[in-house]
Amino acid sequence: MAKSGIPPVRADTAAIVLAGLFLTTVSCNERTVTSTNPGTVAPSPTPALPAPAPVPAPQPGPAPLPSTALLMTFARTSLFAGESTTGTILLSHPAPASGVVVTLASNDPGAVVSPQVATLAPDQDRMTFTVTTSASFAQDRMVAITGSMNDVSTRRTLQVWLMPRAQTFFAFINEPGDYLGQGTIVRLVSPETAFRSSNTRATAVAISDTPRFDWTVGFYAPLDSQLTARRYDNVTSSVDPTHAAMLITGQVRSCTMTGWFEVREISLTASGDLARFDATFEQRCSDSPSTLRGEIKFVR
View 1: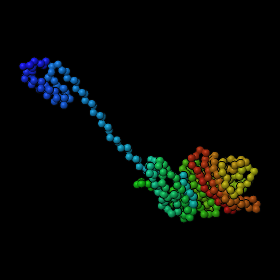
View 2: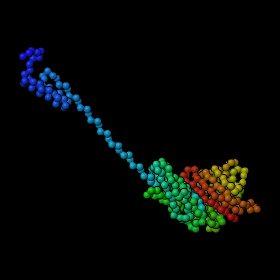
View 3: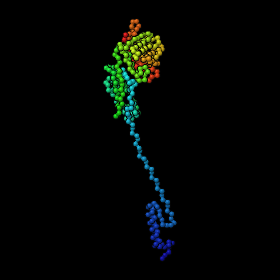
View 4: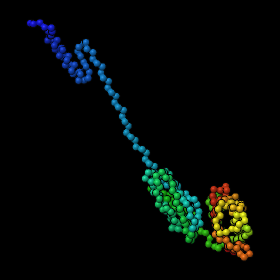
């Protein structure tokens, strides 16, 4: 047999080589190299990549709070028939993005609410309204005003008093906390109450009855002037050249005050006595959170 540079391979050795090749091919498919050749070093296995962290599902936002009618207030809780007052509706939460519709109603046709329907814009939490009473009421009465929105409502009452229809009377109402009136209503009418008047440089009308109803009301023009039919603002308890003054005392109570009065009518007799006088007024004691307001008429 001819010689060659390659030594002969034994059959059993060839079988081992083939088996080694076969095993190597299979192991490579599994990404791990296994060799039967003792001189071959198997590579290190490739590390597995960590699984990505799970992304949490978005949580729903909080449900919008309901816009609830929380409170209804009035600037005045007592009125003479024919007077008006303003009211306020307060919500427990600002109105949502869609706004909220508020409806207002009165249980008495003699008390008119305006507006009766209003839409609060987003983020608003209050609205104002007006209640106007009729001067033709036949008797004192309580008027109920109701505010509603969605499925909730709130209700407040107003006390409406009749103004005396006599030619001569003195009447006032005031809110709780007023020092002079003590949160009451006073309506004194002639001839049941004895009225007396005086007229000097200014006009003063004094009213007296029993000690319980001993009231004096004085209206004073600015210095060096006479009272005329007009409104006087920025009134105090003492007169000066630019400001009128008003003095109301009753039941041994008086106070330093601020306010206004409006003379509707004033006339004198030939001798200079007061013949007719009609004025409305409002005053607040300096240390009081409440007002006293009313009207006085005098006919000799």
